[in-house]
Image (cartoon, rainbow, N blue to C red; front, side, top):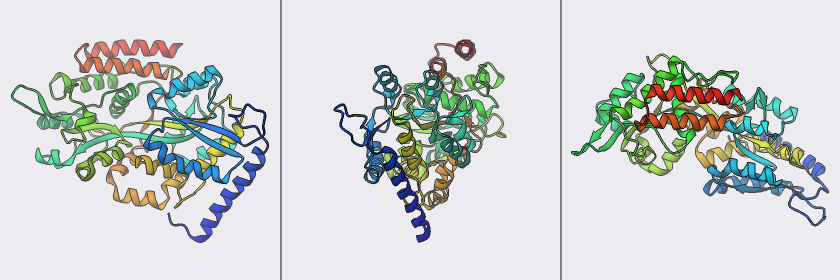
Length: 439
């Protein structure tokens, strides 16, 4: 947002005050990468899955901090998403800990149990409670305690291709499960050999969370959730869980969808008409589809009878390592990165998410900033996902979260490939998930 001069002055004053206080508290400390006994700036390592193009979008903000805070320098350490948790664990074991970590909240239970995540200072906890929506606060909490600043908070909704729906005679996206099934059946095309050439609806495949979260979002529209609020009971064998497993498998069983028809490739190629994805996908599609992105729409997920909205919101958060020698400095950097307005009313986190993903920070001040207000006013797809945060359930994060995620993932996909029935998949997953929760 183009601030008035007075507001700009206040923002600069806050940043300058932070610079002075941090320089004072960091002065004379040995750098974390130094082993020669010389005094120098504190060097904080920041471990994240922001590699490649995403690292290039993050780096200018880190450079901004480093320029203004010579006594506290931040060094980026990017790894691929699939390697992030393994890297955190390996570094912890080897005693080469990263000071600041970008953490998928599902890992939070495991990381707090193993004493990897440090508890934030009181001012960070108060800030998060006051300035983020409930789904974000819960997503950045483990056992009711906040452990960091929420960053990527993504809910799920239905992506659809307006052009393909229009060609098939549909003016609007489906509102009920039956409507989505019947529309998908009409939209699916096959060649003379029976091979699908256009898929009416398909689930994205590839890894556990990309399979589980859309499933749990559909389950939420049926009034259910995978695990009880107190994280002690598996609830997949509920009526909602059984209905969802059967419904998802039906597309593949009836030949409307095919596991070999890659939605990740065919949806942007306009060969799959509908899929369920998180809000970040909009930015990816815009970059991939170029002008054809104008054909993409988004809508709340269909529910069994069209009367209930439901979704799952997963969260990432910035946290500090419990074994870091420089926890105070690490939190000061994170406070600056997540709370201080540096450009057009946006925090560095807000600007980074907009630049790198075309997605939004859920911090109140970022949502009130002009760039985001302008974005929401002209982007109906993005607004669908922001609205979904108001009713989405936070993804549960028990200590055995990653193991539970894998259990559900394998059972869901086994129904899609016809290796097991939905009933058997529910029974097996329910038993194994409950076993993990009991440990």
